[in-house]
Length: 79
Image (cartoon, rainbow, N blue to C red):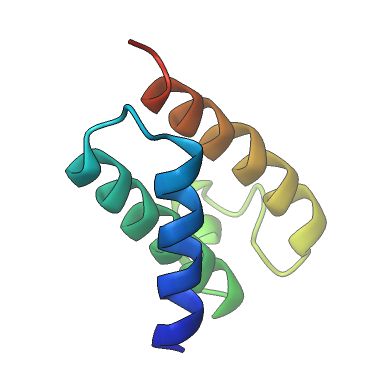
């Protein structure tokens, strides 16, 4: 697992060469934590939404995650 995460980290650092390294690393931690939570099908989504939705249908959740994290990573590229 760690070799895969090291490759992701290297690629993110290449994508954002002017970003603060610590910010990039924290962003990766947040991303990985969210994906892990989703893949483990935590009951968090169902509890927070009071049953309006859950994470068992991955497609809508992943679409929202891509938009959410995309915005965060784009922010890293800002001067």
